[in-house]
Image 1 (spheres, rainbow over the protein chains, first blue to last red):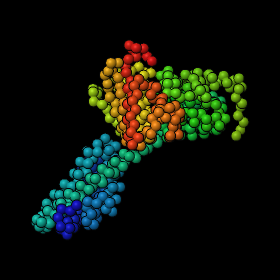
Image 2 (cartoon, rainbow over the protein chains, first blue to last red):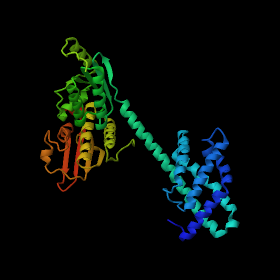
Image 3 (cartoon, each protein chain N blue to C red):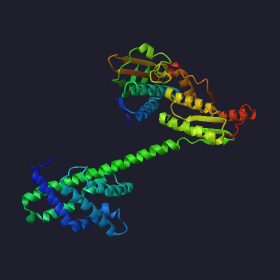
Image 4 (cartoon, rainbow over the protein chains, first blue to last red):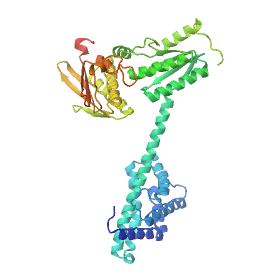
Length: 294
Length: 144
């Protein structure tokens, strides 16, 4: 989108680039006192001024290229890296996205005021065009910053999802050759895959002959969850470990039966304690052969 | 979530994580209506099955949870709507163990047994709507 004939837009952008270059030091000095820079660079003011310089230089490069509204303009890359780190630190300090956005939009004022001071030299028409380009440039800058913040949040969510997957499926060694998996939360396909892998690895590691899957913390057992559980039991069995599913609450038991799920091929117990007793009893009677070294 | 929900709650079913939202909302409302733990569990499980069907077979759609009043007192009704290919043979789809998605084939038939009312409308031209309702009549009639 352009606000005038293309050549006057280009002239405006060029005027903005000129302004940013000429007034680099003045703008940097004003920016360094703004909360956005001040709060991030707490050690020395020089550091903040340095950061301001690099942002101003990049903005000038964007203005020179004439692509003030183009998020993909090469100049925005270094800005994104620089400001993303800064806004992330502001967000960690507890500022909301709109508060950070306000701090970023405050950067425009310094350039705006200096442009005012140059009106006489530039002439009214060129100043107008330069103003339009300046507003566009800083508008794009805000979008760049918000995008960087969103991306940061996206990465946090992804990391947490991964952490949750790993955290929620520990395999515990309860006794010699006896492991247990306390399952917490909904067993979707991704979770049950992790559970299965962790369990099978633990069976090898601990030379387990019995594995207890405790579903006390699983809120809903529908046909897919049951299918996942049965697949896990079947794979463990292939590796020579017998499985018992414990933590079947009364409501879950009734639901499973009415749903028509057949879990009769799997040993089940109401509580983890019952399952443990069953497992130890089996071990003592020597019904399960001791595992040799693999 | 609003405290007074005379308005039905509409939830999109577009991806796996949407199923969690459906289960949580159904459970929260079932608790508010005063369903016992067993009835809550049954309704949530049925909703979980049907929401997954909406996603897998219907290619996504939406769920609508509403409080209803009838002869049997207060109840909770959940509708699942998709504009997928529809079910060509409803009788076959409702039989135990029939699956086209490699599942156990108990989802549709099983959820019918878990709820009081079950209504399935499917257009072979496309689009399926399943509505399940549970009534809070466990106190007066004894739990079935």
